[in-house]
Each structure stands twice: as C-alpha cells, then as structure tokens.
Image (spheres, rainbow, N blue to C red):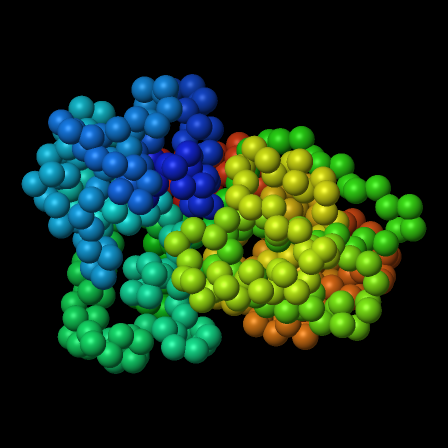
Length: 419
C-alpha cells in the first residue's frame, strides 16, 4: 500500500497541532510492513523563501518528505491560483509515486483543487480527509468566531457570513460554499478527531455516514514525574500553545490578577508558547498583564514537541482557556499522557475531551472570574488534584490510531468502529 500524507505545513517549519499529528501518523505508517509512505507539506514565504528551478524543497534528510513552496493562494476560496507553477509539480509527484491512498489533513496553500487533481490522475486511489478545523465552513480563518466582539458562531450561511464581512456579497459566500462542497464530494471518506466537529460538518451538509470519528493518537514518550509537594498543595499552572486572542491567554492572566488580589496564596503560572503574527494591541495587552502579575507569572516562550516532558514536570495543572470551538487540542492529550489534570473552557472539543469532575474542570469561556474560582479550588483542595489524576485515561497511542486509519484506508469502517 502506497500512502501519501498531505498537510499544510511541516512541523519543523510550523509546529502546529495538525502538522505534528499528520507527521507523527506518517512516521507510524512508514514503520509498518507492506506500507510505503510519502509526506507532502506546503509552505510559503512566511516560513521559507522560494528556490529557483522547482517548487519542491526538503526539510529533513528523509527522501520521503517534501515541501511544496506555494506563494499564491486565495484564502477566501481555499484555492490554489498558481496553476502554472504548482499543478505540474503536483501532477509529476502523483504520477511518479502513484499512491493508493491520499490522506489530506489540510488544503491550505495546496488548494482545495488538489482533491480534483488526485481524482483525475488517480481514479482508483482512495481519498481520505481529516477535518481538523472549520476552514471549509468559515471564512474567518476557520475560527467560527464573529469578526466583531467575541461571539462564537453556531452556523454559517451566506447572509450570516456577510455580517462578518460586509464588503463581501452574499453571492460570493454562496459560491464559496458550493465550490468547496463540490470538491469535497470527491472525497471517499472523512475523519473527524471529535464528535463535536463531526456534528458541525454534518450540519454543514456532509452526510453523517461519510464521517468517521477517530481520536488523534500520540507517540509513546516517557511520562513526566509529578512535581514534589511537601504540603500537598498543587499551585503551579501551565499554559501551552501559541498566545493569540482565541486561545484565551488574556482571560487566564486576568484570572491570575483576581487570585492575587484575593491573596489566595502562593501560586505560579508558567506560560509556554510564542506569539507569531499577533497585533501590537494584543501584545501590548499581554505584556501589560504579565507585568502586573510578575513574579507569579513566568513567560517561557516557544517550545518544541520534544520539550514537553521537561516542561510538564514543572507544573501541576494544565489550563486551556480558549474562547473558540477547539476541535481536538494536542495540548489536552499531552496533559493526560503526563497525568496532569486540566482546567478548560467547557465548549467544543475541549468539553468532549475533558470529563468535568473526573479528569479535569470545566469553566465558562471568556470569564476570568469563573476561571479564577476554579484555579483557587485547584490550589486549595489537594484531594481534588489527587481525585482528578486518578480519573485520567491515557490518550490513544499512535499505534492504535494508525491501525484504525489503515482500516479506513482499506474501506473497512465496520472494523474501525469496533476498535
């Protein structure tokens, strides 16, 4: 079986959750007998400059990993507009590798038309696509957040979307939806990492029977030991992920402000993550909040996947205060692998992944007071930490997840459901 795994970037260039999972799955599939794999990523000038002569570049020494440099992409239609520069290279790759399975994790930079190219060149190939986010549904960077205020969006329609982008006619939103759905109709099977995102795409129009729920898995790694605590107090919190308005870092920092004002006791928040491409106003807000909460807040900057075990060893809790509909955050899987209970916004895939009162705590999103209340409970009730740690279930292994993917690649959904 030849499998082409496709992502919108390479984790060595942009270590986002989708890229990391797609690459980890590729490596696991590559280790299987009778399976030949190739990893195709896309990138642009944000991460790399073009190189003369070809659109393909390499990132590692591995001969089965290539990056397509894509400098022209229409984000509104998710469309690759450089047909002269990109399509011939993709055509050559598909004709030379001749995959039996093309597993698409994202169409950003490659273009949604990639689905049609595969179908035309390889009519017998099976096309599988994982729905990692809502880009196909929402033109606001796939966030399903209104462009004004901080309102989460329940659904998309041409008129409703025009409310977010008044300069774009409703007819263009209708055309966008029809265009994406027409190309999605050539996909044989969709995979959803959570029931939540499956339901969103069913409501958008993809048949329920065509979407299989398969939780993301993670590679095996040593479990970080719990931090020693002489008095049993668990008051070190960790935030992992990029700092941006939707991940809720300001909400978390305001919660810390409230805890300090209440003199709730000694505590520490360790902020892990960079803040690429953020506005000056957002960074000014974060900088001001960090300055007002030091030394109780320690800003530690970007990290690599290989750093997780070491960073987890220094925290008792993981906090994920996102205000948008997260799908299947990698951070939660990392927390559970390392047996750290989590405090999360009780919405979307976060509410699905975290069982309130069993392995974590749900709080109302975008509410610093509610978050501060939960963090105070976490600090002052050591028995709660022990109870939640005991309730943690380890996330699926990459081995198990790859097995389920192979079942789906073979068209054997019945076996995948039984797994």
